[in-house]
View 1 (tube, rainbow, N blue to C red):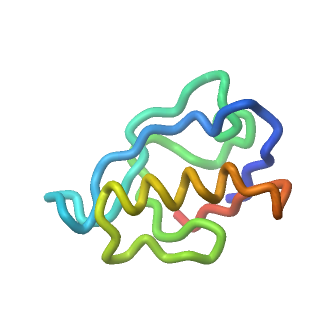
View 2: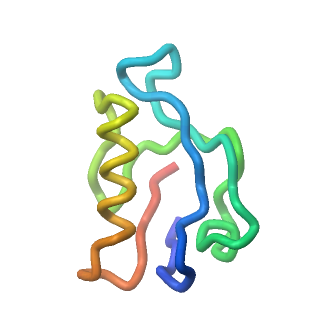
Length: 84
C-alpha cells in the first residue's frame, strides 16, 4: 500500500512487536486526518510486515515504531510503502 506524504501526520497507531504477545506489529487506529486514511487500503487489525522494503520481523515495538516514524520523516521519497 503506497501512502503519499501529503498530510502533516501519518495517522496510525500500532501495537505489537517481537518483545510482546503480538509478535508482528498491527494497526490499532487510523486517524481521520492522516495520510493513511487519505490513501485508503490499510485497515485496523492488519499486520505490518515491512515499510519501505524494510522488514519489521524480529523488531521490538519501539524499533518498529521508530522505523515507521523514520520512513515517514525521511524526505528522500514523496511516499511510503507498506507491505501488509
